[in-house]
Length: 467
Image (cartoon, rainbow, N blue to C red; front, side, top):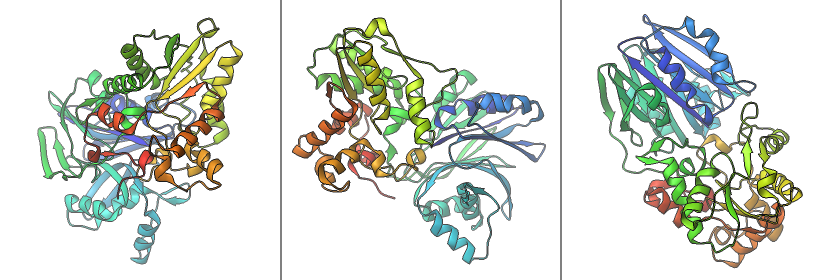
């Protein structure tokens, strides 16, 4: 995944850019970058974040940056921002994208006798490819529309030019962009949580395919939003920050509703409810409030040195991080029946390792309630699961064990109430070793979010969605 932040002000805006970009750090762990326009000149810095944090890497060089406008990014893919000089003028670009047809578009460019100067892990840098598509047209607006027409997958972007900043959201709105405003300044961000401590108020939720041009004096709509939207529903379940709002729907409140929905469909008798840190906590609070069962922290998360387990690409490292970052509170769990809420079960490795520790510490029963349905289909549209094959998903592993192949009867396995669905859940329960396992129903998740299903991307649960 990734998250970006941009700002333009009547005064120096580097401090806002620095902190605003840092507030997107939960969306990526690999690379960070800033580009600032200073006295009509662009200045850029990019750092690797895999063994450190954004502020640690960027604070020592921040004093070298001055300017009234800039863009920044936290990325799990390519090094960004990219600086471009073309017939449209000089500009810097950051993108949050997944280009499913990147090889096709690369070959198209090479046949046109064009070249690429940036690579990411030996392949075409997606942001450079997007910049190239923009440069094929006679204006930034037409160029961005060219991206919408050519790219299969998703792409949201910020363009820093000498006249202002363009903010363009993915044509189906799979990833969000919010516009913030304060006296004498505007900001654009993947997360509205970036705004609060910097004094910005959310001015606008940029629509799918919409293009906005922003200066320190105001903003203009350069392209109207598309009618169709398929924003990623997993934003509210997992990787969105609790204080953020998307489409004017708060993440934390949505997770309370998810937990309450799980509770309404459950009659399991337990001593208390707990959440798997961090995102599972709000789901567990919602469950606890609905059931009037005590909420307790059976696990605490050690955050100073252990990063999130979702992002590391090496499976062995993911397993180690998942185990080491969660510390059980032995005095709370000994002899107790505990129900855990979490955002999801992806591979099941985290639960399997930590459940064994719980039993070793004397827990009588462990019940798991994921806040979303079973993940059966790898994401086709965003980069949070690009390295994951279908068999990395616990649901597909169970299907393969039951069918001898991981792609049979997927519609039945994705539909609660069928014999195959229950068989799949039982396989997953056995694998992770818990007393019971009940997933959220998709209809309940959609209701908890509060948008019509056709406005949400639910592909990873039911296989629906389009390019």
